Length: 446
Image 1 (tube, one colour):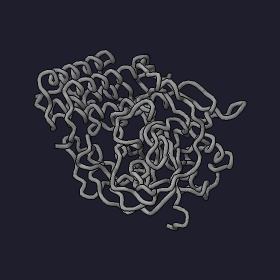
Image 2 (spheres, rainbow, N blue to C red; image 1 turned 180 degrees about the horizontal axis):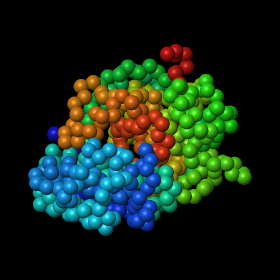
Image 3 (cartoon, rainbow, N blue to C red; image 1 turned 30 degrees about the vertical axis):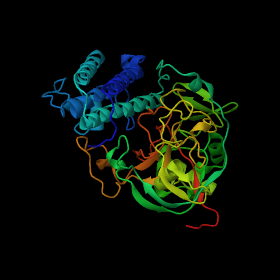
Image 4 (cartoon, one colour; image 1 turned 120 degrees about the vertical axis):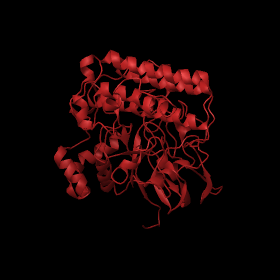
């Protein structure tokens, strides 16, 4: 139906359990009053968010597979994100924390009972994976909401391998790589393991030669922009960007503070010295665009970014082959030595870390560490058809959000691939997002 990956029920069973456990761990240390948060555009009540993760399985998996009623009466009037307006979620008669966890457990038990009793076919597997990956997305949202709300860093207590615990430095990684350009198949191929509707389908895009930075922009590089009064120079900002900057009163990234000995960065509820060679994070699209204008660079388009992450060069390096990699390093699944994912380090590594994760052309950390803004607005690909049953995943958001690529340190590794498209409004600076820069190839004008 919608995926080509034959997963045994035992692996799906593990993933469902893992996503459930991660959600509970992400709120386990918070007091009940911390689950009721101030009304803000960029957060949800954490108690609502927890119930919503259970509701998704209830409505998009169990009901689709034949269940006659929700496992919590009236759940659709509480947790359906398209029936319940964002601002109304603070006034809902939500179940208590204990009742919400109990609802989540009932849903989990019902899902696992189904997996115990039958091997899912292709269509059922799609529904299970959709539900797991949806919970993974909300797990990342729990994490960046904790950052926004200045809650302590989540304590996940996961087993961390020696490889994951080892390389946290790596220093800077300056310079560009040259991408020869050519006809590129943007998007996912039908044989990809799991495909969200907005990735469909791979289609030819002609991309001129370009240069793209080997690594994302670092804190030290962005600090030069701040020191150069980049936030105050109107000519560097688009009209919408300047309106945002003026309204927000921003003169530096949202989590930066001046200290006696230089910049500090707020990491959850702690202030830490700004790491010079880590990627700048919690900057929005407008800030990225202004930095590029200051640096005489630009953001890569989605096609350029995906091309740099996934294509392989010809033997002489002067053209591209027709092969696309699933991940920057190849088709093998992410590992701790290739990508900073799954909250292994609870933060960003230096941009020079994890050389084993380089793309064929030599771009580093195009998976993990920080999401990367692209120049492209979020639109459907040619021939787009909305997927069922989750018709609201992509279609309501086309046209006024920006595409992000690659994944962040808090993103689950089973979610990301080179073709995965994240999408947010350009003013959002609460995400674990940064950017890398791009330029036309030498001797090529656009």
